[in-house]
Every structure is written in C-alpha cells, then in structure tokens.
Image (cartoon, rainbow, N blue to C red; front, side, top):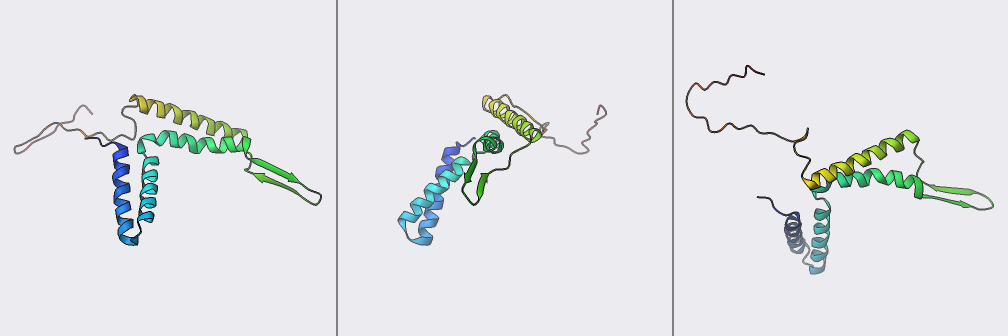
Length: 139
C-alpha cells in the first residue's frame, strides 16, 4: 500500500503540533510548529529528488549571471557577488542540470524502471524439505 505524501505531511504536522502543545502549553506556538513541520515534510518529498538536484545545480549557474553588485565612491570601490565560474565548471554544471531534468521527467512518467541503485529481491517461492541444493552452473 502506497501512502500519499500529503497524508504523511499532515500526520507529521499533527503529531508535531500535539507534542509542541504538550511541551509549551501554548496553542499559537503549536499551530506555528505544525505548519512549519507540514511545509518541511511536504518539501522533502523523496519522489522529487532529481528536480531538487536540478535546483541545487542551476543556482551557481544563475548566480554567475545575475548576482553581482558594484559600488564606486571617491575613496574606494566595492564589488560583491559570487565568484565567476570558469568555462569547464559551467559546462559540467549545465550537463548535470540537463541530466537531472531528464531523470525527473523519466521518473514522473514511470519510465525510469530499474536502475543501478534499485534493490532486486529474487524469490523463487516457498521451499520446504531437507537437503535442498541449488546449482548455478550457468553463471
């Protein structure tokens, strides 16, 4: 049985709100705690791991373009922002971002299937008896 992630977030928020209410005896703090727990759990949905990876990788690429500020005055010049990335780093981060987007698309469409990190459990069936032997000569 697969439980919807929103249900998990709601149950976590209710439990966290109840625990906070018992510990603090303050209704407002317990409501705020429940809302924060709900948001944290909803944003940490493991099914969206590839798109999160995309966001993490794309931020340095965007910061290379947009986040730079300079200020000049009579006595000194101030420049604030992120260090510019070299071409190799930009290309590698761009490729990782594209791979994350493709993996997210494949995962949402259910086409990802078994991959190198998936766990496969082989089960032949229930075996009963004495002196059971397994021959694996073909391997």
